[in-house]
Image (tube, rainbow, N blue to C red):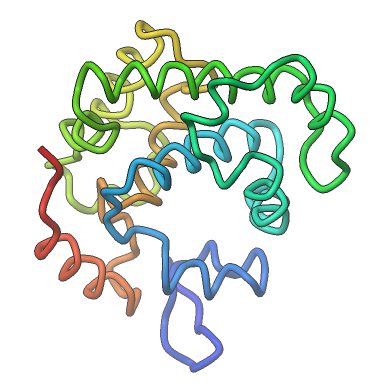
Length: 199
């Protein structure tokens, strides 16, 4: 079975069972299309920090990450120095991993370059929207996530493997990966239909 009953008794994607706080995240965020550069950048960073950990750990610390990284303003983060790295390594509210912190700073610099070259991060990302299959539940990569990962790596981004990028695509609405019977699937489909893709 691909769903479980939510707090209201209606079916939600089975992964919500992993933590009580997942229901709110699932119902209000996961899968809804995002065209905001800051939110897309934040998600790339948080997916990188999640590597080897659980999303529950990251979600619980998300507000701490936002405070520590200037609300994921990549223009600001791109100017971070070794002093900022030291500050972040001493911040118990986030994941204190030097490689992931330095990757976030690197990616902020790459994000700044992307905006100059492509107009926006969103315009670039949405070129890789999954067309088919529209219901790929159970997979962890796709041809689109592999292609996007490859292009990001070519441009110097870090912690952007195909599985990480597929998780980003699921969360940011580049594919509707809600289970067929999930009550949120139709809401996401409607939001995706109304969404104007960034140019």
